[in-house]
Each structure stands twice: as structure tokens, then as C-alpha cells.
Image (cartoon, rainbow, N blue to C red):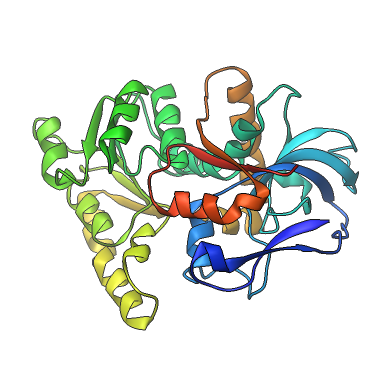
Length: 339
């Protein structure tokens, strides 16, 4: 089988090789999937840049999600021939991948591959963040950073399902138009306006009840300052790292950018700070991932969730796809297809 390996850190054009490699052997409770399509996530860019601590040592096959058909199964949950979406702990950039059967869900034959791929990492992250951790409620004001990205779109849809009002931030006029067309009540271009000032103005002095932040650093600190009493802030990334060079000094700057947290301050103001890492959930709480995946598939089948596929590529265009995602011009999910 063919697999795309990350062989060196750095620019996308130099980082990948497509090689023939052995088909993985599955253990009890696992399935082997014949992959049709796989997706990109910002964590892939971080891994390629050598900034993602969860990534294996070089060389390795990246990738967290696939759509395809079961080829082999050592689980009672699935049988060969079933069409599925699956969360993978790396290895997704390949023609065949093995994964825990609890990280797999059946999808209809007519579901678009890109839609299916978006459900694994991005929609499961959003579900866990919004429903399990933040427990968003009707009438709450939710601020979503990077709202035009895959997780941001998912968070918006899930928040609206609960009856929340959404404020979304994005970095271009094109994305702002997209957010407004998607039903976001208020959209803020963070390149033109300081959300720390603009959001309270939009809310007439009120503050957000829940904030979702994949940026980290100073963005996270500013978000904490405008969080209302009884509010929750959920961090699920640190894309601000890409603005700094790799090394210990940059790591320290990133940490200081987040600001100082003390439990007493959180208690006195009745505020919560929560973190999401779906790899850790998959490793240690697979039942949470399993529930989230099955729920987002169900809601998509019912037409209540509508993932947005922003751009599609052939697998051989992996470098081009990475460059586009890294440019921050993308909206929704970036999907790659094997021939």
C-alpha cells in the first residue's frame, strides 16, 4: 500500500514522501480500513513544523481521520464491507489504516467523503468541548475564535442547536461574510478590530458566557479578561506557536502569553478553564470519543449538522494542501482523496 510519510520538519514541499509500505496488522478490537479519503487538521501543520509534542518520531505517517470501507475486523462492532468514518491515532495519510473499533462509526453510502471526514476530529472535538465540558445552554453568549475553521463551524452549529447566541472571530473579510451567511449573530475581523474591546461593545457591556479558543498565547489571556462570571473558557490548540520560531525561548514566550492562572481567582469569580486534547481522550476515555462520533454522525444524517468542505485535493497534492491550510485562507474542511 502507499502511505505519505513525514520525513523531515519544515516546508511542506520538502517534508513528505509517498512510499510503498507494509499493510498494518490488526489486533483484537481493531479494524483495518481501506481508505478512500482523509482530512487535514491544524495539528498536522504543527507536527510538520516540529511543534506538536504528541507526534511520533520521524519518519511517521500523520493523519487523524479517514473515510473508507472495513477490509478486516477483529471486533464484533463491524464487519468487512461497511462504509465508515474513523478517528485514527496518526496513520491516516495512507491507503489502509488500522484503528480501535470504538473510534469508528458507520456512515451512509451516499454521504459525501469530505462531510464524513470532517466528523471525526473536528466535530468530535467540538462536541466534547461544547457539550461535555462547557455544557452550553440556551440563551448563553458563546464567543468562538477561528470560527470559519472546521472546529469553529462545528462549534457554531452545536451552539445554535442548544439555543445559544454566537460571536465568531476570523481574519479576513471573506471569512466574515461566510460567518454572517452561516448564521453567526456577530462576526469580528480580529485583524481590524481588537475583540477584547469590540465584543463587550457588541454585547452592551455584557460579557461572553463561554469562549472557545484554539489560538492560545495572548489571545487566550485576552479571552479570559472578557469572560463573564460563571463563564467557561475552553482551549483546544495553540496555533499562536506558528508566529514564533521553534525553540525554548519561543516556548517560554507562548506560556507567558497565556497568562497566570490561580485557583483562588477562578473560585472567587466562579469561572472555569478547560482543555481539550482528543488524542488523550481517544487513549484514555475511548467511550467519550465513541459517543461523540456516533452523535455527530446521527445529527448529520438528520440534517441538523452540516459540515463545510472548503477544498479538495488528490493525495499526491499533500504539500499543496498543507500550504493552503497553513496560509489560514481555508474555510471548513480540507480533504484529500486516494485514486
